[in-house]
Image (tube, rainbow, N blue to C red; front, top):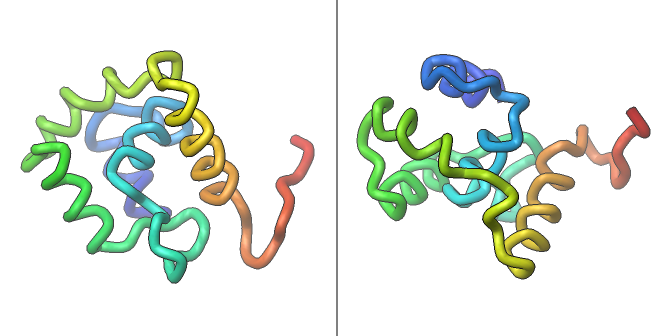
Length: 99
């Protein structure tokens, strides 16, 4: 997670912004069952970057602002919501804290 936060900062994005989470979801972060919550495997990252046609940090900078949750279709939003929930779990917890 620290590396993803550093990447977001390098791209000029607050890693806690929803657009960053939508970007990670579009890359396919956490799709593999073996990937722990809050992490993105190298394979997921490289495959997602290639699928989105992004090769550089400047490409990430251009892509992230267009990752607004308001533009997701209903099916996409449901998938994003599940990703977001799982991504924010800690350890083996099955629920999120209220705050």
